[in-house]
Amino acid sequence: MIDIFDVKSEIEGFLVAYQRSLARLRVCVDGLTPEQLNWRPPAAESNSIAVLAVHTMGNIRQNVIGVACGLPDDRDRDAEFVSRTDDPATLIQRAQDLYGEIEQALAEFLVEKLDEHLEHPHRGPTTRRQALLVAARHAAEHIGQMELTRDLALEKLAAEPTSLRQLHHAAISVPTEGLAEAKRFYGGVLGLTEASRPDAELGRPGAWYALGETELHIQCRDDAPAAGADYHPAFIVGDVTALRASLEDKDVEVIDAPTLMGRERFFCRDPFGNRLEFMTMPGERAG
Image (cartoon, rainbow, N blue to C red; front, side, top):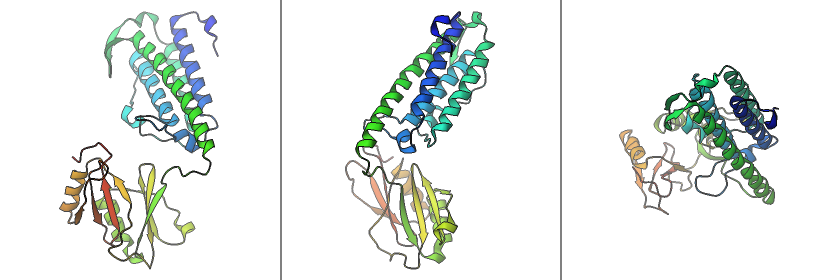
């Protein structure tokens, strides 16, 4: 690692900043469990260590590789904030690869181009030097957040070793002969994405669907619930009004429900009588 006192040029100074930030990132995530990597502090708009790591590397790459050096960059900033990473080795390798890219790009960078003006994809008019500065400052700030979040996660999760963390999945029973119809409804009508399922290990047919950080499991049983049962899973929906209209267009009967704790909501039943609830987040409008 280059020592800050051995820096001989402005470009080398930037390289030292990125090198140190990415080294801190690797140390921060190393050894964390999936739960620790993806834990979010109980505060509005807080982010997990995994999200902060992905976002920080996306910002560095865009500003250094894409803006300052003018090389291709296909960053999807919005996707960074909904990402999940369960293996710290993935982030460590990504940080190592990114530094290699930066080192190669800056080795070919001409110092006289630092003051060239250009249009930043998010910040408007800027210079190549300002893009390099933004990457260095942004990385230092967010990696500081990562280190604080790590401390909070380790303390919080260690203090509550047996507490329930989050819902992993909800299970719904359907008749064995109705699996194809269940897939048509949940995959076709509701548009859920089917996930991998270890059929041989479970010993009976069914289907699993990905649902954000949770899953919906369809299990086939000969004693599936009678129509009219009241137990149900509840789904957060971006636009309740639009979903309601879509279900009605597909001849699914919807059931009105009063607003509850600020959430607009409604119910319906699947083809086998399972009750389903759909609701907005608190404070969001129905449509």
